[in-house]
Amino acid sequence: MIYTAIDTFYLTDEQLTNSPSRKNGIDEATETSLRIYGCDLIQEAGILLKLPQAVMATGQVLFHHFYCKKSFARFNVKKVAASCVWLASKLEENPRKARQVIIVFHRMECRRENLPIEFLDPTLKKYADLKTELSRTERHILKEMGFICHVEHPHKFISNYLATLGTPPELRQEAWNLANDRSSIGTWWKERRD
Image 1 (tube, one colour):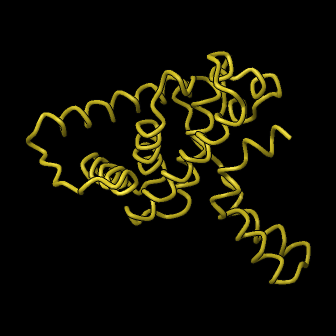
Image 2 (tube, rainbow, N blue to C red):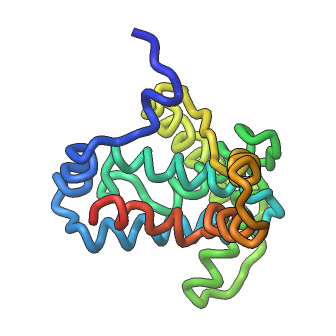
């Protein structure tokens, strides 16, 4: 059987209810919080890396899909978020170097945990370990997606469909803003469950 991006994009209610995280004892509220946190990390890193919104949205979709197949108990949310940003930047043809992604996530972590921001020397073992982990996690994501990572976002269709329907420009702008709103992707999981 040949799978397409559409075949692997939608999730059943069964997949949402019986997620691997839930099977590992993570309650729904914690799982939702971790999903929102991961999407916030992706959004913030994307801004700091000066990436287009489409890259951040792709990273967030990859993040959600990965955790529909793997548990938060087994895979660190920060490492997965970093790898999703790195992979999404390549998929959306705005690639960033591993070094750039590692440094941004390192600084974000230092800032979020009120630690002094230290220079991350690429010649040190700590940097080499982070780079290895970034690549390893990217491979896990690709494997879980079956190497089918194309994400079709609604952005390019919104203006055309609404213009065809003769809607006012204000409504088109509002629809565009909703598609771009990071909280709409971050809370997608919770809304889908309700």
